[in-house]
Image (tube, rainbow, N blue to C red; front, side):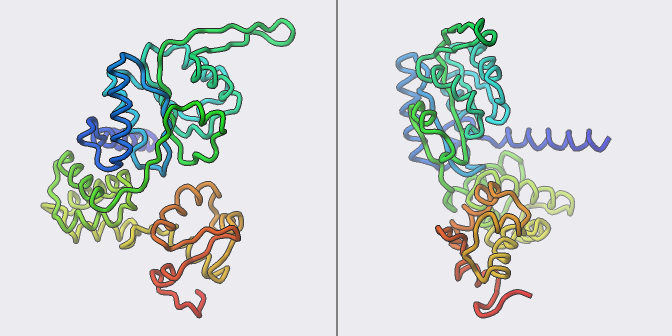
Length: 334
């Protein structure tokens, strides 16, 4: 029963995410340079009656890579099939997807940096010349068949573009980096999402949510939903600054948007290693986290705020980190 409840909650959360996802260029706030270039590519392809070039998006999680893929599909009047790098374990997995694509369809591959090397080998001719090479059988009796694929577009998304092999990266017609959003754009996203959800929100509350959103639309929407829950349960007529503060307190998020793990990471660097430098492997062991999680989730935001420096010798907590955590420079935590 508990599993069913959790499954229903996840489905409800997923439906809310889809509800808040922009479906028109005009509704997609921020990333103006990326949007301008993509609209040019899309309009040109539509004018020629062709599929767009294969596209690669990279940047931190929650910045809108998936949303852009579906926006392109909508603009091209093409359906989007979605998969992820970890799901493509065998050559047969990608072969099955490619061989069933309809003309001008889009294949969106999230976490594309995690695909198997054998899958890459299948992708190369498919991306370059729309050829699918299949090997039937094993050993001396094995035969190779070549299948012509219809026009299609692969859109890849990754948080770790450096982990993509050079041959794979070179086969994308355009690569776009999605950066953190500015404060004003996050405020616009909070206001738009509040209207869609049908909740009243005070200007001060919009500002406080945007400040805690880590410059990321997905997090802004998540915090807004939790503030809506708080206002509903405690029968508040609108989401005001008090509701936002109570919500952030419950989630253990401070005024900069730092969560408990962010603060713990900085404290470990200061407490155990005198402010650094400390190597990533040592830091991961001390924090009991995966190295990839530290690199992909925590470090980029801490570096964006100027609380952490990443050097060739290791990670260093900055003066701002000491000030934010209220730790005197000449003292360590007990």
